[in-house]
Length: 363
Ligand SMILES: [Zn+2]
Image (cartoon, rainbow, N blue to C red):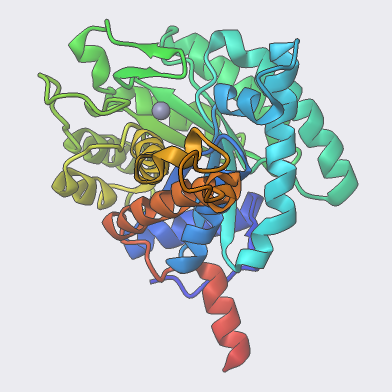
């Protein structure tokens, strides 16, 4: 177990790597939760505080656009400014929840490279202003392109990111399913499994430049579907780690691995993946459903309040039920409950590095 401790709040650079190291050495991972507004962000922060765990707050390009507002004319600007606004919200609040928070953007394919570049413009300005990057890391997902283009673009952007203490997440092999318009259901089965040789190539090209994490595909699929013919094969992660370790004589599990499409996965396979250096598991579909289910239950139980301000027969006012704070909170609470389960599955409960710091202080 690592004895490191960190200040609560948004972490980046060396502190982010300390966090990853603690995860890998401690055999746990952090949930990376996709958010779309202050409700879901605050629910994630509250869940992390409640579970005494550090956490990753993540925005997809669509989530960022929604954060800025669906009514904005320029949807590209909305994707950029929504992400910036969400990140600033988290920077302001995170430390008050007493845990470490990683800020990250999700899948950016070739068409979305300009989105990442615009976010880096903002990130560089923020760094000048505060000495910290706006985001801990951005994901560049060029897994649908050929590997040489994937890695040369990743290298180009990482060179820019390291100057402001940022990390990059890349993807090798294709995560099945579709998320936010990125990805496809129609891909060859063999592409769903990353080749260990490709992971070694990524290590050789990127590790001399700066810190990177790697979303490797081992049969994982975005979304929750009926059991199909794709099988989770976490041993692919093990083999990739072994190849890098043997080739370069590194320590155990040199790659910092990310598990995409964690929603609906078998618990045993999650547990196995944790032993192969997975420090981050993305969760979106299951928390989306939890939020909707929480709101839905409330609406169905209070149907009249969503049709009438005052009961047409009894004259009873329904303000206490239709007040958005009431039903949005039901969504938050349900999302927090689903995250309790995620922290437990990932063995992250009680492991916040910020918590250790306050305990040290109190002692
Ligand atoms: Zn993903």
